[in-house]
Amino acid sequence: MTLSIAIGIATRGRPAILAETIAELSRQTRAPEAILVCHVDEEDVGDLPARRPDIRFLKAEAGLPKQRNAILEAAREDVVLFLDDDFLAAPSYLEVLGRVLEARPDCVVATGTVIADGAKGPGISVEEGRAILAADIPPPDLLAAAPHFNGYGCNMAFRMAPVRAHRIRVDEALPLYAWYEDIDVTRRLASYGTILRLAGARGVHLGVKAARTPGLRLGYSQVANPIYLARKGSFPWSHAIPSAARHCAINLVRSIAPEPHVDRWGRFRGNMLALWDLLRGRAHPGRILSL
Image (cartoon, rainbow, N blue to C red; front, side, top):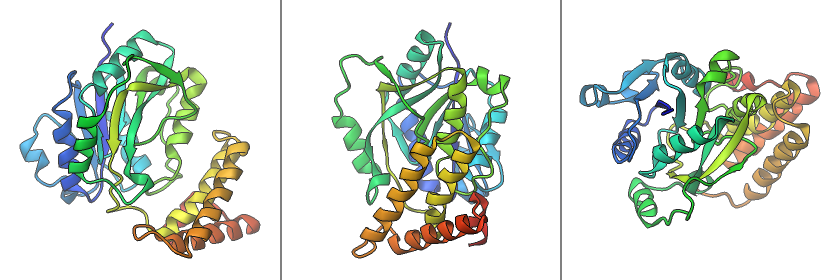
């Protein structure tokens, strides 16, 4: 049985990068049945609606969970592949994804292999990303897959049958950039099957810094969100506490000589504010909306 695949992209404030990501999808060896782009304002997508009538454009309130949920509600396909608006997929990505999911009906979440991740550094330009893809050497077994703890939000595919049957949605209590929303939703889906990391579904995450969450808010989320998810039951305490502690330590140490592209002091201030709120019983992911 051939599975139908929709690509879902939530975007905000980066129309030029979005256009490059969409253009790269035209190189896929297996075309998607649909591309759904969810934005907030018309400026988010520029002139794409006029140039690409084949794409379905959706509008939602700001926030990654709300935008991704709008895509889940609108999709009619068997699989939804969420890509960040700055993720360049290798030409064989969709073909590999479809073949693995067809061979592994137990798989409810599939996440690809990120061969370069600009989110862990100053970011990668579109030109650099395309050069990295061109130089990449795929593994001998394109369909190789291994169990994985969670899907990575920049490229993760959901089998829609369990999503629909169990009304799985991205948690909208995690606002804006929604730190760890990918872990939460994919770990909840894992109750109904397996999560696989695909060796042959490859891509580059540019990690564009424009329109990202400010340091203070992100730092708050780095502490509040994992604790919230641990209390909820989707993220083990054995992962949540080390995660929060690690980010506090990294932000403190690196605030002495911060990277030009990271507001380390702002993040550390956000970390400390979240810890203070935890002590007072006031910590919640939504608190960032008032910071």
